[in-house]
Every structure is written in structure tokens, then in C-alpha cells.
Amino acid sequence: MTRIIARPLRDYALGIYDGPHATPKESTDGAVFLGIKNITADGQLDLSDIRYVSEEEFPRWTRRVTPQGGDVVLTYEATLHRYALIPEGFRGCLGRRVALVRPNPDKADSRFLLYYFLSHGWRKTVESYVITGATVDRIPIEKLPDFPASLPDVKEQRRIASILSAYDDLIENNRRRMGLLE
Image (cartoon, rainbow, N blue to C red):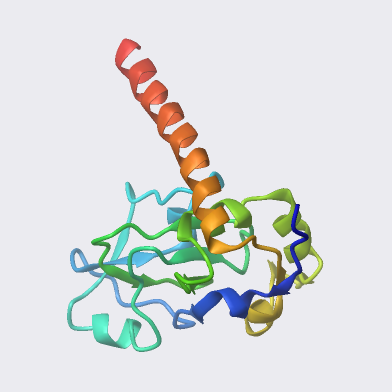
């Protein structure tokens, strides 16, 4: 068995970004303004209750980065330890206190990275960097690229992610069936 050496998260990423540190004007339609409440504790995006950013303001809110399919979004302030995968076709921007990691496909599988971020080991890593504030806890987003990550080679990541995703799909199918039966 090959020993996996911890490397900085940035070694697995094409980029690590956070969104603007503000909130857009209210809008009744437009692109999704992805906030903390839209990222669940179990690694899903919940778009049942969303805010919008107007088409007029959208370019301003995506100046740093536009989320794309395969990006892993995360919360870094207030409610920590929330991670989700951006689906293909998503059109939106990062909200306050939300960041994303754009995996380098030659070094990291998006699905594996999501599972890794949801792991106990990563949670311990993040906890070691938490800054306790007067009102909320946060991780220093500028240090996130330096957080140590221990990922196997990308081929192994894909194999593991495929197995875990198959189980997740079975669980979701069973949830839907139970909902229909109720």
C-alpha cells in the first residue's frame, strides 16, 4: 500500500476563490446567489429557497470567479463544514461567506474531493485553523490553499468516488420510494 503524503490543497486545485464580501440588491429573478443556507450539512445543494442576483449585477458578482460544474463550494464563516458539488449547467455566483475549490482534473476528482471534505480527517484539519470571533467562527480563507490534504492518485480517487456515488444514488432512490409510499 502506498503512503499518501499530505500536500497543500492548492496542489490539487486550478484555483481557490471566495465571492464578494457583500450582498446584492434584492431581485425577483436572475442568476442564483448561492448562500450558506443553500449548502446542506450532508454535502448537497438545496435550491428550494434561493435568492437571485439580477442580470444587470451578475457580472460584478462573478468578477473573481463564476462557479461551474465540478467546482466544490464550501462555507468558511459562521456555519462551517458545509460542502457541495456545483452541478453542470448551474448559473449563479458565490454569496457571502462561501468559497469554491476548482479541482485540477489531472490531480483531483471533484466527487472524491467532496467526500474528502466531508470526512472526519478534513474536519479536524479545518478545526485546527478556526478563528473564534466575537460573533462567529471562521477559517482564514487566505490560508485555505495551504491546508494540508492527503489525496491518493486521481485514478484511485475516481474509483473510490464511483463506489461512494453508487451508494449515494441507492440511498437517494430509497428516500424517494419511501416518500412515495408515505
